[in-house]
Image (cartoon, rainbow, N blue to C red; front, side, top):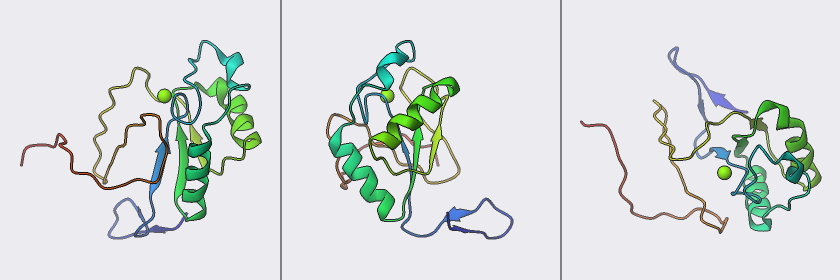
Length: 133
Ligand SMILES: [Mg+2]
């Protein structure tokens, strides 16, 4: 990963490169709870997700699967991702469960809710919550 360092601050990605954090259950395959791990090796990927994510990877973006699956489910997840041909850089387990995420960070954060179609992203004007000036 190419990072730019300046002035004793955390490094940032090169211009135009994104750190994609992508959910697994309900986003790139069926929504499988941790309590039913036996389904995690037999489920099928959403093909539009597979195609779009691999394109982003080939364009040079960073692909990290950020999932509420626990560490003990990482091996089965890795095997599934590899078997279905997903290109990625990392898997982060332990995302808090329950949804309603609101991420606060000193770096730029954008979020996109998956609603059944995984495509390239497009610009839209929407309302967001920000800190008071
Ligand atoms: Mg999910």
